[in-house]
Length: 104
Image (cartoon, rainbow, N blue to C red; front, side, top):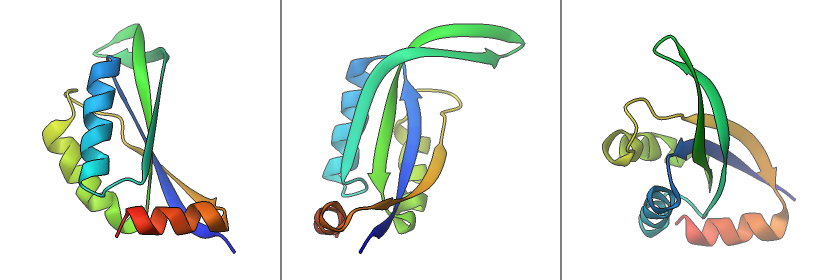
């Protein structure tokens, strides 16, 4: 048996910002787990192609938490226009059970 989950993706400019957001999302029971890894992003911003070092956050949560996470990001995310991409997925039975315990 699987559990429907949502993976929210966002990025910040450094590890400290990622850790601060991750800790707060976990403390507020908005996410069961947040993974963050460094990489390079290529994008267009204000008519300029940019290549920036960023830290990608993968926020594991449930669909009913999305409005609260969006409101949280509107207040706490350091970017003027934060990335906010949602991917629907399925968690295995044991991981899904653990997530339920973390998000209630």
